[in-house]
Length: 135
Figure 1 (cartoon, rainbow, N blue to C red):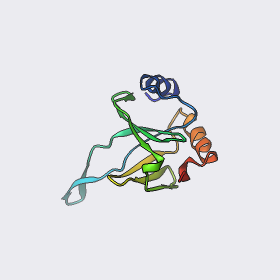
Figure 2 (tube, helix red, strand yellow):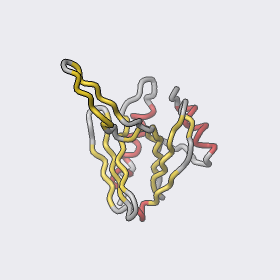
Figure 3 (cartoon, one colour):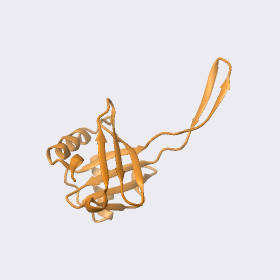
Figure 4 (spheres, one colour):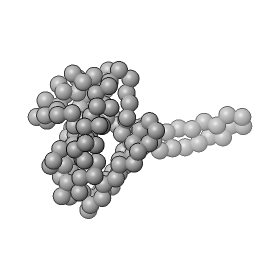
């Protein structure tokens, strides 16, 4: 279950300091296949991967999540390697797109998660620090 204490504990194992700079999200859902069966259509989606995103003056950390919000790894992308960065505001989720010379990443960022008001606080903190437009 997602909780601020769990997030802080997991980040410590990677030596990452929590400073109201963490958001959670997932890969964009993609349709794997559709089976039209008359009245009802069956749609299969590719498996989405959850992430924690850490924003700092140096860049963005992507922490893929496995199981019960356990961090599996850490990918750091420095701001000076990011060639394009956009955060598009949505109703329940924001869309984050970033590009470097070697990759393009598109993710969904949760704006609200039940019983986790710290996520909304972190979004407001990051907006105040202008991390969403840090170029």
